[in-house]
Length: 307
Ligand code: G3H
Ligand code: 13P
Ligand code: ZN
Image (cartoon, rainbow, N blue to C red):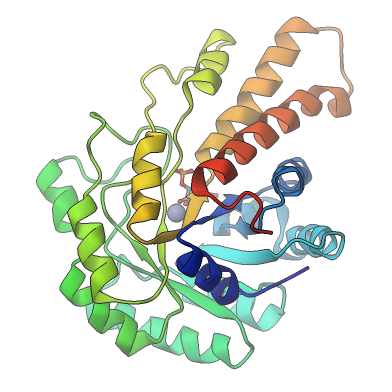
């Protein structure tokens, strides 16, 4: 059953838990996370990035997610993740496929980010679609070589209130030291919780944590055992995710942990069963590992049983 991002996040904010937002690119990942939601009786946000759309097609992914949402009584949000391309976000709104979109104007000058986000909010709200916006820059793998550079790009609490007031966005992605991909942290105590606290005090919209994968040791060692070269990968420890949720994070984005689980499952299977050529058999353990990763996240975020 589809619901709006606003509804799901307002409930989470009042209940002091967060909802997992899982990136999907294909049927297997979608089935894995939906299966996790069913087992945990959890609400779920399923999201597709611009890259996922290039890979699999907006209509194709949408058809899969719409069917999955029809088949469950759990609250499901279908979210367009990191729309940097303004025209594509407009297309996503007009398509009627999504229940929410993210306009990611984080790399634009402040005033332009406000102006474009505001227009997106107007278009989206007219169709009852919620909008997530981003203020401060959440790094990718190759961004920010120095700590000073990274800190300068973090969300400024004083700007956050002004940004939310001016744009009317429904959720705000904050930059507090996370980054996308499998290589996030050099040391464990890296997130700027004081900043998060100040942003949460300055604005009342639900906050979103991107780049929140944990790179679980169990999955990483499976991956490396079967030949994947990610030995120095490091994610956000569970304890820090929990703390972020206690300070106001209501939506937590997960992609990398699903990717490494998928990878580990396939590598292990192919190594152990080199004679099997049936993709349905090859992908089964990958799906199961992704489900176990997603279930763990739901338990960690406190959304188990909230569906
Ligand atoms: O935040 C980015 C997500 O992990 C999506 O990554 O653009 O490679 O699909 P992608
Ligand atoms: P990870 O790379 O940490 O999984 O983050 C995903 C994300 O933020 C998607 O928007
Ligand atoms: Zn992200």
